[in-house]
Length: 227
Image 1 (spheres, rainbow, N blue to C red):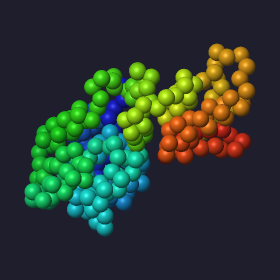
Image 2 (cartoon, rainbow, N blue to C red):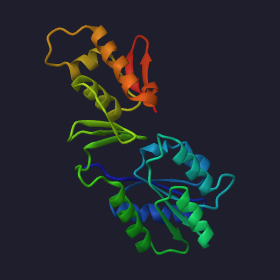
Image 3 (cartoon, helix red, strand yellow):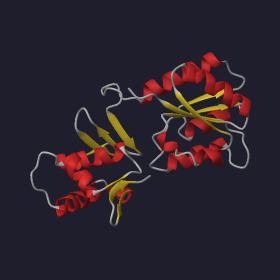
């Protein structure tokens, strides 16, 4: 079972350290950032949850949340605001931006841990065992049920297309040579032409809509999925 990865974003370094320590004690993997600008460079789509302060430097937590929710690659990532802005209007703004919860400062560590656990439980699909779902934005692969969905609608993939997409999403950023793809996807077949790989990847790109552009070709090297 993979650990949940959490990103803590707050311009108070001491608070980041306290939250990181306590969350890691609970078994989470935790990274920290001291500004929204820094957080956006950490590939936020990789995280299971973001704990986000509102009042920071040039970019506020509200602005960062808006950027995340407008990007298909990060729209699915749950956000909990942790902030001293505790008026009802502030809470409404945060929730309207798509935040999953809103904790006002000062808060207890027990409260934060309870809210984190609750949001992670809600954001996980109860019908699928942990570790058997791959997601990138609104593109979702259910490994147990062998189903791919795009924005909640099933994408009809062949067995080989499904296996290629699974390979790429499990190894984002890695370029696979044709020989590697043949070995992993067509290991039981005796003769498979390079053209077969090209055709399957071309069809796959078309079927997954805007995410097709993330399947890249590196001439002389092979294929991969880049974020």
